[in-house]
Length: 87
Image (cartoon, rainbow, N blue to C red; front, top):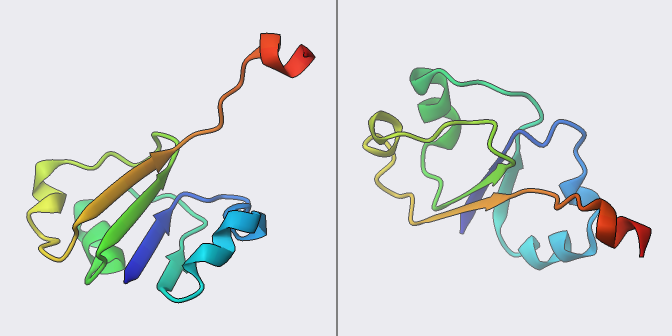
């Protein structure tokens, strides 16, 4: 599966143990942010899965219409909760 990961500014996802589960897939990690539909279309062409880090990139209908292969979208975001952090 072709997987694209957007907005991983610090390239942290590759350091997670779970990233190894993607070893059999074609993964592209983008460390910068773009919002222009044309540029995103180029980056995501052929992607079957899209991982969004936080809510940085807005995925709207004009982009989705240009990505017919895209089947899966996932948004990840760190959960920051001082109650649990203090525990």
